[in-house]
Length: 84
Image (cartoon, rainbow, N blue to C red; front, side, top):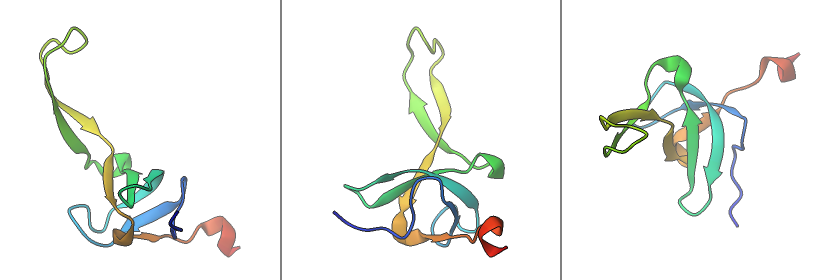
């Protein structure tokens, strides 16, 4: 099992990729793919996913979802509470 520099609940900044410069919170770590699932809801940029028509979504279309990036593309942001 790999050891990662970030964990669930950490505040991180994306340093590379489509979401470069965004700050987010880690929702979970996907260990098989070495990816971190991020909640970037405050930034206004979310991943989109196309869904088929169903009873729950009669029109189908695009829905917002959390994004995942490789763990090497995120850097931990220092907490203000720890600095005090």
